[in-house]
Amino acid sequence: MDKITLRKDILNERSKLTPLNHLSFSKRIISNIISTTFYKNAQVIMCFVSFADEVDTHEFIKQALADGKRIVVPIAVHETKELKPSELKSFDELEPGYYNILTPKKEYIRQVSPEEIDLVLVPGVVFDHYGYRVGYGGGYYDRFLPKLRKDVKKIAIGFGLQVITRVPRESFDVPVDMIITENGLLPCDEGLYETER
Image (cartoon, rainbow, N blue to C red):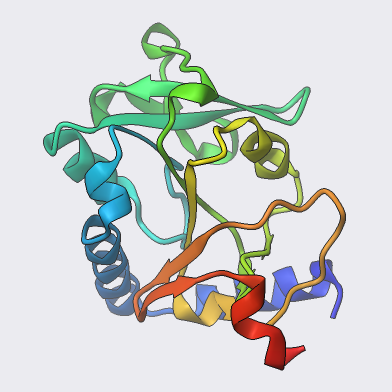
């Protein structure tokens, strides 16, 4: 199945989650993230600000700030299709921006070097067992992730219905190290899934 059809199908499935399931699954996913050593050991965490029916990251961001973590959110530069990481000190510093996605108000933009980041929570529409993902089609994260230090953990978060065995790949796609859903943690390693090919 091609990426466009796959994206459409999974977004359609995700939109069918009841508000109650969306809330309880999101809470479980946040709990699963916070329980990892990656979270506990990270000082600077980059997390997308969720919108529409994505996994709700708003409570995660508030919790991480309360835990004393430095939280960085991505600002999308649409002209160049780049992500600029900006440190967030309070959830109140956000306002609706492009596509109504919450983004830092101009006076609260504090640009952070990708080198400072210890952990990245990556969004997406579809994920596979090898860590490859289908996003929303802009390629923002595929451009951004190679700028990180080699030891930085890249964790995709999504609902269980968003994980399939294999997604179509392109040469520039950057895999994540792990996927976290309401069902638990899925380490992504080519070697673990050789039998599925």
